[in-house]
Image (cartoon, rainbow, N blue to C red; front, side, top):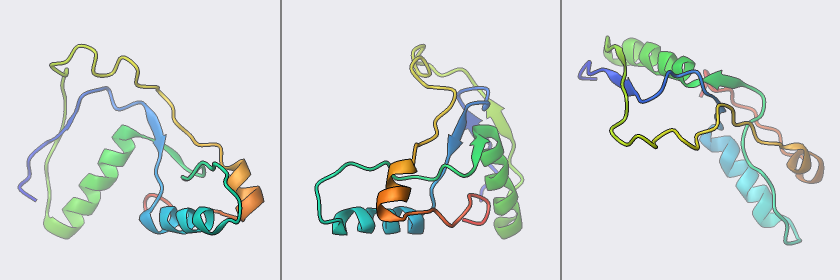
Length: 112
């Protein structure tokens, strides 16, 4: 809202999937109500996007709602090991929670 830049400490090319709060809540409740002790991945496997794409979504929503016109800055982190173990891709395997609990995320990142 103050038009300050968004700082990325990477090139923004790593991909992630994002799960909207209502989908996470629903999945958590399904797990809690399941009658057996088990372990499930919770998340959204439908839409993978780069961190840069996510920042662009934030910028456009911020522009629409608040007139945000900030830029993106790419910087080196002061900790030389900051991104050392950061995978380029993260996408959960939801096959078990889909099959056993009938969970399917319904809110995509842009809509959320």
